[in-house]
Length: 615
Image (cartoon, rainbow, N blue to C red):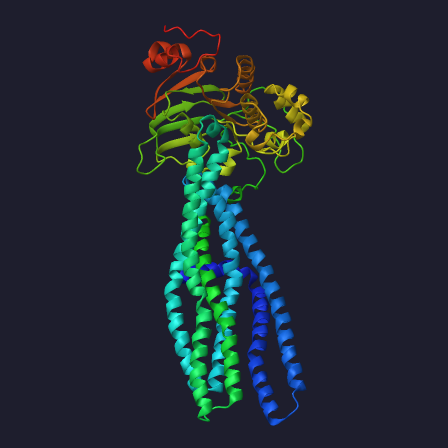
């Protein structure tokens, strides 16, 4: 157990030091009652031998037993209550930190492993930072007290017992690091199991459709077996440590019985003193067991604390307050943003913490020689990307798979930061903007259009919880979801199922688009946002996007030819660079890659629409 790790453990217990001290004090008082009992028993034996009254001694012994038990029970409750506070505090810190971690850090850790750290590891921390800590302290104090009293009764027997304790204690100390290693391996194996389960349940339809149930089960079984093996190792070493208290008493008893019997026979000590010493020896099993159990638990807890602090020590994204903005208020429009074009005035926003912005102004985007890698030792995904997107209008981004199209959007949202070059919005470097404030000006529809468990209303208002019914009606009409809402048994309050399983792919995409439009963004990013829509709905939404583009800058990663032909400007991305830019007609004539994408239907012409002419 290293000093820094132990200090980290104490850091979790520090806010609850008062109840922990009170609980430990009550437990110690119960232990003191146990320490006095052999002395009273010794006096009882001596009184019997002398023919003196023993009633008071019996009453005192009974009071010590009952009183010590009651006081110790109150102490245990106080410690357990503090333990619940410790685990709540740790979980609050983790759940407050996880959503604010950088996407790059989250991508490197499987979700199941992070869940394990919030649940299983904090439970181990609960025991270590409270019960095990108190057990170690009380066990050590009680053990020292008993040894002092045993030395007072008979120094020779005390030294003999101390030798037994020292030998077994040394062996136990060797075992403790092995318990810590086995505990850490167990927690890591459980994290792998959780990750495997998350992977399976997140793609259960694909697993079943692929007939891969057995392979997935085998993988989960392998993870479970790994956790079992690590748990067996921890149990093995824990059993070795756990038998130490019993072994101390058994060997001590044989030593005291032989040596003490000889001393009584030689007249060097009284029978009453021998009985008192033997009682202390039998009572020794409690504090020794408590001490061993506490130290073993601390070893396990230290392993859990290490895993928890791996997450807590990751740098989070700065909160909006750090940039001088309230936590929930919509971000202000930068002064350098262009004046808004004429548009229908939006409905008055309600007085909520995060309402729909009352004004929309388009944002400009510029990339200059941008370089980006997902890993430091990996190849560049963007390698000198340069382009300009003026404020307002629809700009499409096309290119072969792996060209870096979705990466452009990830950089604009500051899910990742560029490695080189310059990326700007409205002339401001992205790296100088607070991520949370920046994202309030952007509407983002991901490629897989995720829908969260909850109601349809929850999903639509996820980014704008203060949206009015009029705002909701507006976006529902825009994305052609009014009919769906009217057909649902509970309307907007209908549950959509885990990850929106109660909805079709096209409905999920339209909900994601509506969620983005509800923010009235200055920059709208659509990553193949209409790929699962039928031709009619896609055409209707194309009209909506064109309308939005009058007052908002719209960037769309597109594979459908119909989306591309309607764009004011098209960027052709290849090998991490923008190789060409222009209108559909200009690119058909001037860029071979774009012409090949169009003619080979990599842009996916809408059914019933003929591919573009080669020109």
